[in-house]
Amino acid sequence: MEWAATTFALYGAGAAALATSMVTLGRRLELSQAKHRSLAGHARIARRLAAALPHYEYDEARFFSADGAPAEIVELRRAGFARLSDFYKTRFAETIRRSAEAAVAISDLQFTGTYRVPFQFSRLVRADLPTGALLQASDGVTVTDLDGNRFYDLAGSYGVNVFGYDFYKGAIERGAARVHGLGPVLGAYHPLIIENTELLKDISGLDQVSFHMSGTEAVMQAVRLARYHTRRRYAVRFCGAYHGWWGDVQPGIGNPLPARDTHTLADMSEETLHVLRTRRDIACVLVNPEQALHPNAPAPTDSALVDSTRWSRFDKDAYTQWLKRLREVCTERGIVLIFDEVFVGFRLAPGGAQDYFGVRADLVTYGKTLGGGLPIGVVCGRTGLMKRFRDDRPADICFARGTFNSHPYVMAAMNEFLHALRTPPMQALYENLDDTWNARARRLNERLADEGLPVEIANMSALWVVCYTRPSRYNWMLQYYLRAEGLALSWVGTARLIFSLNYTDADFDAVAERFVVAARAMERDGWWWHSPALTNKSIKRTIIKEMIARRLFAPRQLRAH
Ligand SMILES: Cc1ncc(COP(=O)(O)O)c(C=O)c1O
Image 1 (cartoon, rainbow, N blue to C red):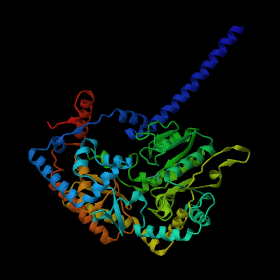
Image 2 (cartoon, rainbow, N blue to C red):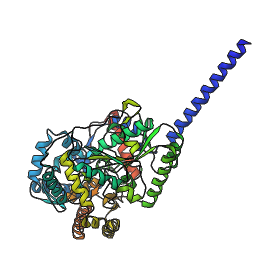
Image 3 (tube, rainbow, N blue to C red):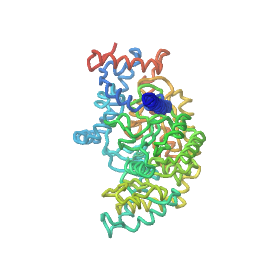
């Protein structure tokens, strides 16, 4: 009898364990189904593949014929490249010389200098088309290099520059004068912090504010607070979204360790909503509204521009609907919805992405332009989420400090920014903003199409991505033709053009004219040569073959056939 009971109990326990593991397995499966099928959606695999990717580079001959172009086209390219190289080395001589000297001991410059173009082409480009990284002045919508060349600024200081550099110069100068009496005293605050807090509460529609030194730190704190208050472990970020360089929000390439407490799920996906609706361990969902421009794809860079598959299209209605549904699920499940507005905040609308899309978050991070030209990260949130200690558990705290947070000079420049935001001239910049920039993009696209140039602009307001309409291995060359025409891009090249809102029609027309001239020159020099056999697929296949060959036996330098 006792035997039977024991056996029965064991069977019961076994069945229960099996049922539990089936449920766990089911949940795992659902999680996998909610991942985007691209490599960006599979952070671990992407990291592993990246680690296995061999380095190789093209020799001089293959550099110009990687797509199998005929000899006369190769000669055109060679001549165009030599002409451009001479131009760079003469026109930008001092800037290039001093930048090269500086790069010897500045690892950041070595990194950005290396990753401007696909790695197979990088060495020759660096040798013959060196890009200066030093500037001496800014004025209106232009910047000036050490040789005195003025460029239209399309780099936008990583998004900091919303109102034009002259505004930030003034904000810093006036701000510094206002806090000069206190100077760089830290720990205690300058009283300007009180007004900034009130203004930020008003903009965000949230109850409390914390000040940090960068967008990365603001995101760290928002996620930490969400985990602390929900007592749950996982943060969800969407495939491709950038949230700064903290390990937990950068689980893929770029981070030496896997992010074990982050799920990277597909953006705008039913499967993702299902996961959020059914799991109990998700603390927060992080949204970077910039992704509306290219859902599920990382912010592009020209170093990944190996073919013409770069894609971008902004559908405001579809993204708004998605955010609304996300909001509903998060509310239903007690998940903290975080809008990371570090990049797009104050760029799309004075009230930020919350206003622009008409959806409210529980926590919002801001940064970049909010500092009035100085370094900043801010978290705004509901009272219950911002508290960093528990009344009933004195040692259970959510720690976040930072020597330089709430620096008086930053508070003062921020105060200038927040006040300016409310003034009629600045409000006027936002009037019909999307219509203005959509019309500008359309005008340029029409000109490019009329001339048969294989380039197309996609935009979200004044944030632009250059896409390419004809399969090519050389699209990344456009950044060098643009620079030669006096258009300054950041190190990600044509992946991101960031216009400040003070661009007038005349400024823009000048940029558009130069853009077309640059694209024409690139076409004339043969880089966009095309044959029916050259497809994006065939390009990818060639590159994969090269990599396999390199891993198996080839020398570091691949020669022309
Ligand atoms: C959406 C978003 N979040 C966070 C960050 C990180 O900000 P920071 O570079 O100030 O650390 C960035 C920077 O580009 C960003 O675009």
